[in-house]
Image 1 (cartoon, helix red, strand yellow):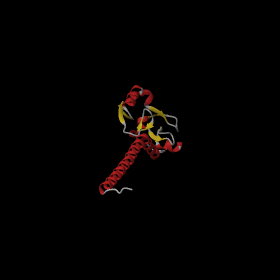
Image 2 (cartoon, rainbow, N blue to C red):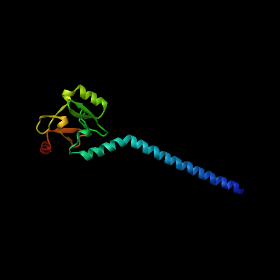
Image 3 (cartoon, rainbow, N blue to C red):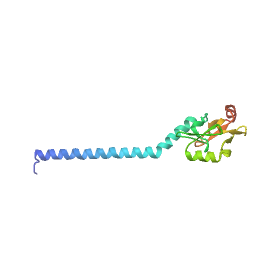
Image 4 (cartoon, rainbow, N blue to C red):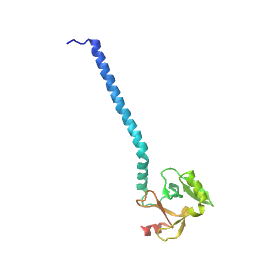
Length: 147
């Protein structure tokens, strides 16, 4: 067997180091891409479920919901003022729909008294296990009687 020279030994060590660096960079790159993909795919659902759990069966402010779709809003709300009342929606499309269907969309039915309630003045509660749907009540007392 032929003995390796010092230059050949240094070259082998350098090649091994470069191979390890490429392997380590590949692992880091794969981990980063996986993290970004997971965050983009599941991040919204995770934030939404945490938000739903925080507000479940509690009063929700009007600014935190879309009054057109009657759902809890994960993002920021857009105020829409109609006839002096402020309604909140999630997007410009819902704002346009609310303005067009104002007579139908301004009221909701109280689940306890079954009276019609103006959404802008209602006591709003996130329904338990409703995937973000809210209910409107005339007062906190009606909600307490309902639950």
